[in-house]
Image (cartoon, rainbow, N blue to C red; front, side, top):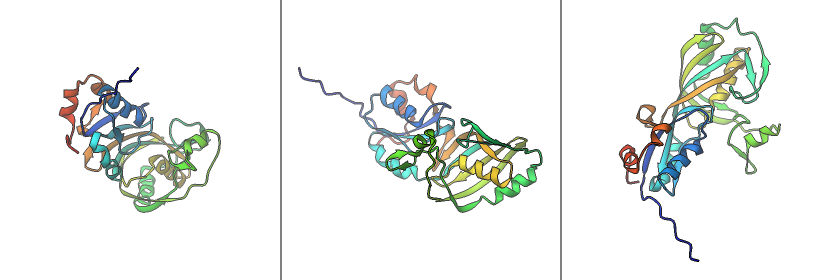
Length: 237
């Protein structure tokens, strides 16, 4: 019996997705790939399941641009909780340390934030997709293993305090590729001597692309192929 060759939708372009909390980046890729029967779909910059916001997808011939778009600066809105440290540096982990944070003032937070601007070195978290001998660090971390990580050069172009209400405060961050906001939150907590973790995160921009032009996953689930074509930022790539 001859197996019939599968035919795929011949479509190329860039699609901006507003990723839901709880979804992985690959969940968003698979939604588009399977719903519209597209052979090649990729994303440009992983977002953790905890995070929401802009995910740049490249379809068809546009997948060759993935590396270029992945290397662009990113912008985020983040909420940070003071007084606790967690195993994952974010709200999904177990609390590993608790300290009083009532002494922290808005002025002190502003002072500490100032010290994190510009070029610096950052140690990636264990709960990350970085690989060690082919194995993602987060898989090792889940087994309780801690691996020494090399510091990576990053740049934080802008770091703005947008709200302050103990034990929470919010920031806007514009940073280079490879910046871990979870690590930034943890480092800020260390500087403030009370500990902190990333409470929530939303990506608002990636390079030239902005969240205002994105489409929710619920909307995409209702699309026909014509709707997808209308939303592509680049049809031929």
